[in-house]
Image (cartoon, rainbow, N blue to C red; front, top):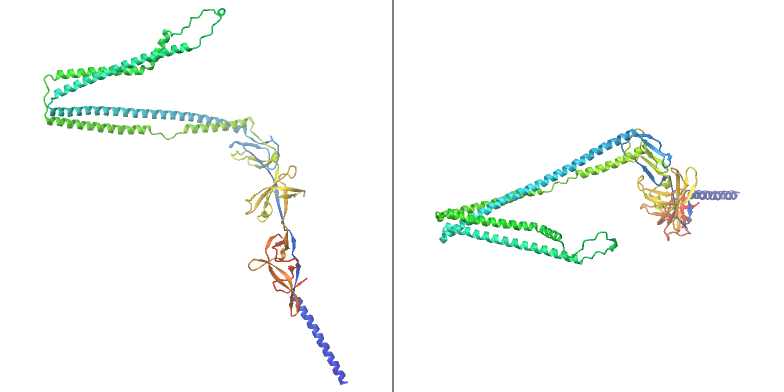
Length: 570
């Protein structure tokens, strides 16, 4: 009985032990499951990376037409508003005709003032030129006169010095002054006679040359007459009056004309030669008269001067000569400076030319004003278009800038939109894009990007334009652009969620691998460094050789996972 009870108690204890073991096993499994991250994995695969560019823009005009008019005119009325469509020839705005007529009258009066100013400027220029010419002529005349007087005084002083030296020399040679003076006068008479004879001979030679030239001219004329072709013979029945017979010899009148022409050519030279003869003849008469006068005045003889008197005379004559030479140099210097000053060029004066340019500009402005008056002050639209800007107001005056801007509808429209710096990597000129009208939803596909340039609105951004075919989107319509660029195929692509960055900002992924532990086979996360070749919002392309298609890359987990963490694929 006792053994039965003891055996039953043992079995009860054994049952309690196994129940406790079961309970601890369940508890350990629960703790293990709680400490293990549940992850989602994906195997690397091949594929391409796509980049989609989407932006919103607006249709604009391809070309704007500026409407301008003369500045300073009063606007009578404005006929259009911004955004209004106009046709070519429509009235955009009108000018105040009364004010326009007053402006034209004022312009004509100002032009007349300008014309008179130009005439005054030309007159002043001419007067200044005349004064300058007179000053130059007067300076040169003063120079010539002063130099001539100084040279005459120098020549006179030189003669006196020579005479004083000659008198001293004669004293030393035992010759009296009367003898020396008479001999000098005789030499002067002989020299004057020699000059006179030379002048007569030169005159005779010139007269002979004139006669020979006349004869050569007559002979040449007769030779040309002989070589000239004979006139055609006129039939006797057509002769009403018999003509004088023509001879080969020159008439006396023709000979006289030739002689007169030659003498006229030689007239100046002949006159100069005759004047030289007359001056030489006068010099001969003056020399002879001086000799005769000296002989009459010095028949009784002149008193003999001492050596000291002659030396004093030479010294005095030398001093007079030096003073005359200095006076000549001073005259050349002083009057030469006056000539140089008179010949200095005046500063340029283009007042008249500038005034003429201003007058021409005023005339051009007047022609524009008169054209406006002829058009009754109406400013017309030059093209079919839409008014995009209006800078004129009723009652205000026009400016020298653009009055209105018109979108030229004949040149078509274009889509324009802003591209971010990141988007600019994937779109450019020539790419074919799709446009969708925001209001209607209508799509226009395969349209090329025509321009792509840096934008001033956003830093680092760009503005692109797409040329629109006719009859597509209207001016000012909002539209959405979309474009997708597909990369080259990559053999290793993973979701972007699989990428992580380490402390050095180097990308890596976590892969699941099987490891053996004391508790048996378990799954852990292992870090694998990778190189990202290209990525978009969802997918990243990695360099080959790091991951295989059989590996499971962790793309998501229910808690933070790092290299070495226990994981369980959920």
